[in-house]
Length: 406
Image: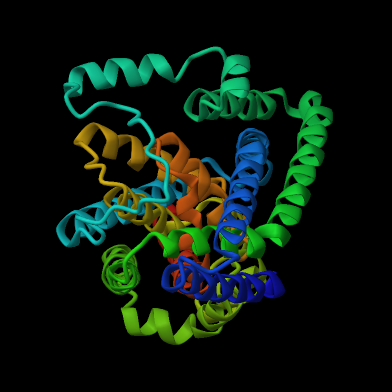
């Protein structure tokens, strides 16, 4: 994965360089052939993402939901853990939406090389009409959704399958293994696509820079610093405040005793890779009973992605600004829901959120070409996101232990 991230960065830099060359020398003999080749390679990358998106979402959500029941220790621990996870992710997304609506990076810019896409919900639709259409739309024919790429009904169908597999107990084990295997197949295909990603990013950035002013880079820096600021608000104020409110553990105690896990999260950008250290910190430094930590922390490394959730909400608003779409309240409600679902479905591996970011963009009718902007900066932001994810997991274990009185 580190090689892929490095290659993406190299591809991005080369794409920017070629884009400026094409912009400066429009009469160059190779101008048209290179531009056409870049268009072809860029669209091939986008098409490959669209190809894998629907089956990946389908199998990842089934596997995630069906595995929730496998580690249950007690009803209280289960209940409080899920309440904590979903509450903190909801808070993170709300903060991201609030800050992004205040800062509004990218407003006033239009990227000519991106296709204009129809809005999912019209701005003129009333909230009542939106809720009615939205709820009814969640229960469309799942097979039609598979063929049309309509993500939301597919998500609901996937959740229902995962819940039903849980309720079947031993009878559902064979089906779980099948879905687990198919999910691994999807991840393998994603890996192959990510190997091609540096070429796709190179091509997309070349065509974008060729048709775009330098003002875009100033907007990108504003977006990056805004996201880091949102992460700091959540990680330095929100999560420590919740911890102190429920347990009286101070922020300094949290950061001092949890330092090994946080440093590992920052360095590896992987909640899953950091999990052994997070368990060790919880058990040894905070004396969390293993009956709590062995349930809360592995589950958190899978579904508790505060940093990923807030980033995907912020990135979607940024891209909407760049294509000149003002997302109405009803559309931002969709974004709130889909960012939470997408972050839950993101594997605990480096840059996994970029896979589900494609789902967020597609649901909102935003161009997948925007991934060319997001991928090069993703490695930097992923270090901050993962650190917040791990901090949230550890805090969750401490809060659940206190509330459950274990």
